[in-house]
Length: 253
Image (cartoon, rainbow, N blue to C red):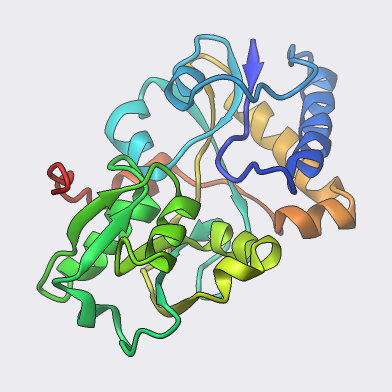
């Protein structure tokens, strides 16, 4: 059995994520549910999400609605207390270089767009849905593999604009000031349901949700500050499935 919280895990948040998992783990065990002692940080994303003995995982809305729905149990989502997003929701910020004169993402409709991966809601789907509502599509020019890598690509001039998950951006502002100083936010995507917290098919989703809510409430203030977790929200599968999915990018030139 495994547990993994990979989406916002970085060296600066590792200890706080461990503390959060310890609370969830103990809550599950009190409910008679076996749970691994520690988080697994070596398993790949899809390997973890599709693991037959997944006790807790954190995925993205796009993979959940396109491939994982019906194959995993959904517990809900953490609320990261993001400005402009309802509880349990999140959004992305559009970043350009600090010296870029653009004041709106539409100014970069034909520019080089960096995205972390095609299966990312916050890095690919959300900005494309935002653009589609305004009658255009961002031109995918560079697939970077990670939000932080997309931010660096823009800062280094290898791309002109990217959409960065707002929680990840908050971490960049806090722990990568040199990178943040080279970038500027010029807009935000529309909010969407937060990163789904899932378990393997057949798991007790209600018990997991209870343990997650208790853990979010009991988290020490210092760990809460590092992770930015304001609480836990039960988000319905229908809320994720209602979000449109734009076409995947063609291979960047």
